Image (cartoon, rainbow, N blue to C red; front, side):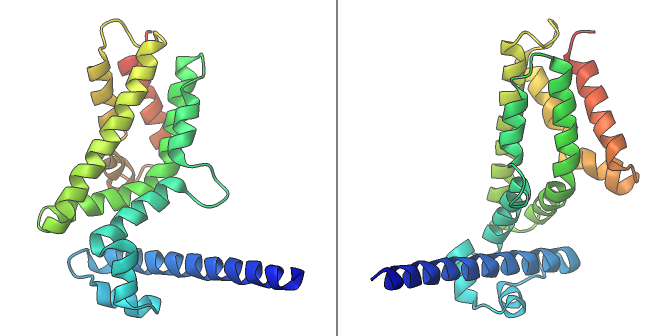
Length: 213
């Protein structure tokens, strides 16, 4: 009896591992094709063939191309299996009594996460201009990112960390702009800044715009 239970547990664990490996392979292939060919030219069929799965599997698991992009973004935010998800790390930083340490932590986190997430958000932005299937996702992603920045602004306000002439709405706008994929694109991708310089810029800009002198 014990042997049967152990065998079933092993079989279940093996199936889960294979399923996870398959999901990872599909997302890796999808991202490579999106990057090399563009969103419009990439097809579910091509992704399925390269990943060694059926088109039905991709539609069932992800709902199509837009769903692949959505899962790529979520995976980028979560990081690898050994790291704490970015949103949880950001939330934890809010409890620090020193506002400059909070902002410095957000800046470091931005420099870690932006290289993974920003290229995906830029893909969504560009593809949504011509692809109706991604327009809803573009709005969803923008709204979610602004909601997160509003929560950060509100946490600074509750702790009396904001300058007296800066409202929560203004702080939200600043956080939303400085942490945007467009800012990363301009400074890192187009201007060639390294990530430490980018992190310092984010920190200095947020401190100057939001915190008392």
